[in-house]
Image (cartoon, rainbow, N blue to C red):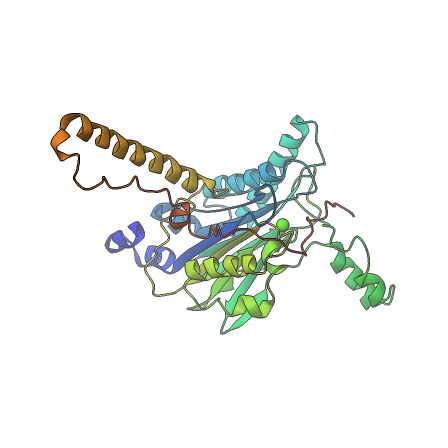
Length: 363
Ligand code: CA
């Protein structure tokens, strides 16, 4: 919203960056005890930064089987955003993204070492930058980036899982398809942030030209393990925020007993809808979405207290009005209506698939 207010003062290049990227986001803890996914965006209101570096979105999925998954994903997102924000004019976007991810890895490894857990803390991460109509991206692990265009969903990233290595062995005739499909380690990650060095980084070879109406989807595996590609596609034509909300809602409707954390970030390009995502997560330091909820609860309590005090005041100072209308009941706190966009609080139910991300770090 602020971005549009600044419209008249922006150069055409600024407008290109600021006004044609429309973000949406949604997240849910699923059936897990902790939200270990994190995500964040550059501040869309920072026109200087967006003009210089483009619009950045990041998603990270802390490895539940390892220690400090939440801390790892949070540190990844914060580091990538802060490092990328300091991008120098000499650096290309690709270099800046790689440097930011490399620094995130170093920070996570240092955090783990300090906790005596070196090598036992990990997170995936995916990040995209849209700058002057071009898309740049980078990935480590099995979170994914998709391009949605003309009704088609295309995965831009390659999962760093052992399953992909098994597929290569099948292609070369080394093992059978059945052996690959039933391999107990097929879901193990072959690269993630948190080790001394990053095993594999997947990134765009060159800037990718976006077309009006394109959507870029970043997500944790809690989305694509729960929804089919068809189910994802069915909702991608909606405005980014609405699409993100619906995707998470549909995941929860599956009622999987072990539903993983799910995180969705969508960047719409050239969509003629005013940015309506003014939630507090569209900022550099976003992580888990609980803040809005507890803030609302506190606010509700304060309002209730004020109403109660007003009632008491009325009783003490206006005895003749005792029989008047009952006071307005203290407004019940309604977290559901206040939840942050994307937080679907519908009762988590039980389900069946998505066992925890295998804690792996094989190979
Ligand atoms: Ca996950």
